[in-house]
Image (cartoon, rainbow over all chains, first blue to last red; front, top):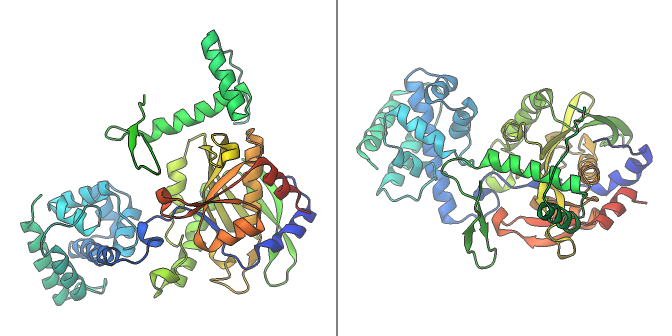
Length: 160
Length: 70
Length: 200
C-alpha cells in the first residue's frame, strides 16, 4: 500500500491535529477507563501484592526474571509485567505456570492477580499486610524475608 | 511476496449465486469476497483453540448464541 | 514492504519535514519502540496516578505485533522521521461497518494507534512532531481503498482524541461501546473518506 500525496496535502491538513492527544484502541485493562470503584481499588491492592510476591520469591532463590520465566515456560515480559505493572491483567496461563514453579495451589494466586472473584477469607488482608512490609524490590532484608516466609506459609495452607 | 499466482475456481451454481450475492451486498468484486473469506478464515483458525468458542452476542438483550464453527 | 514519503510538522520550528510511512512494521521498528518509547513513557508515568497516565502507557507493541504475525488480515504500520520511530498503527481488514447506511460492508478497523511519547503535548511541549495521527488516518483510508472497501474506516477512540476524530476528521460518532470498555466508536463512509483525502 503506497501513499502518494503531495507536500501540499500535509501542509493543509496537519494543523488540524492542534493540541489533541491522538490515539485509538482498547485499553489493556478494565481499570484504564472504568470509574474508580472500590472493587477496582481492591484489585490493584492485591495485584501489587501478587507482583511483589513473585519478585521476592525469585529474589529469594537468587533468580532473575529471565530465569523464573524460563522455569515457568512463560515470556520474561510476562514476569516483568506482573512484577512492575499492577494495572495490567496477567494471563491466566502464566499464573498457573508460576503456581507450579512456586509449588502452590493456583487458586489463591489467581485471586490475587484479579483473574477470579476473591472468595478466600482474609487473603486480601494478608496480601496487603505482606505488601506493606515488603515495599522495596532491592536486597531482601530480614524484615522482607520474614514477611515473605509468613505469606508463603499462608498461601501454602490454601487449597483449591 | 508481491509475486501473484493464479487459481481457477470451479463453483456450483448455488455457490456462484452465493458469491454474487455477497459481492453485491458487500460492494466487492467476487475475487474481493474470496480474498476476504480467506483472511477471515485464517484469523478465526488462529484464534479458536480447544476450550474456546465463538459467540454472537445481542448487544441489548445480552443473549449469546454459539456460532457453529469449524 | 512499501515505504512512502510523507511529511510531519516540526513542533518547534513549524517547518514541514520529510518522513517515511512503512506499510509493514519490522523488528527494527519494534526495537526502536522498546529502546525509545518505553523508557520515555516510564519516565513520564513515574509517580503519576492512574488518571494522569496516558491510556496506552502500558501497551506492549511487541506482543501486539507478535499476535498478528502471519495473519493476512492484520496490518501494522510505522512512521519514522529522523531515524526515530514516531508512530505505530495496527489495523485489520476483516471487520464490518455498523453505520446504518453501510451496515455489514467490510471496512478497515483501526485496532491500535499511538504516537511517540515526545509527540504528545501532554508529555512534551512543544511536541517534537505533529501530524502522525493525520498520516495514519490517511493511510487507513488508502488501505481501505486498496482492498476495495472504498475508504470505509472504523475505530474506538481513546477518550482524549474523541473531539479530534469527530470535529477535525469528519468521523461519525456511533456512541459508547460496552464491549470495548465504554470507548466511543467512530466510522467514516466512502464519501467522508473522499472528503478527508481531498481536504481543501
